[in-house]
Amino acid sequence: MSPNQHYANHPHRPWLTIVTFAFTVAAIISFVMHHFGRSTTGWPLAFLIGAVATLAQISRSYTTSLQDRIIKIEMRLRADRVLSPADRETLWTFTKSQIVALRFASDAELPGLVNRTKTERLTGDQIKRAVQHWQPDWDRT
Image 1: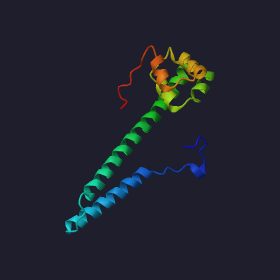
Image 2: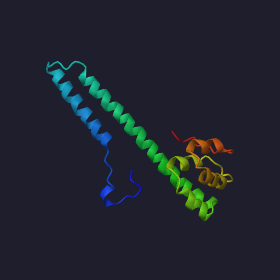
Image 3: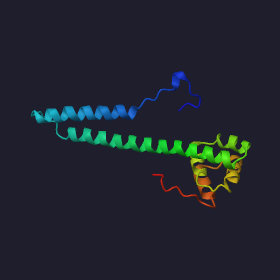
Image 4: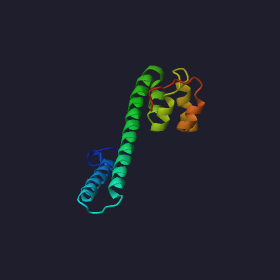
């Protein structure tokens, strides 16, 4: 994804949906051919499995993307309440993984972890390991 979005690069192209559609059409054609006595061996089932597997991937991808967007909104609210203006600016320079990891820090340790992440360039996993007072997220899947 380009960091600078504009009119020319903003459309979402759901290529996995196109793949699912192709698998589904191929499965339907294969099942119809099989029904009318034209041997298609195991292809109908293979196409159907491909469609279902692709749908599962789409579902998981969209679910986690939506959860990440919600966490970013949550962190914006927490940052307004807990962080200094300079720390808020720093927070929004971090990657999505770093912001999501900081979600687990308590309000008291969030400013320190933001500064530490900036100076030490901590990864999401390193941030999670550094959290001392873990704020659970039982709703994340």
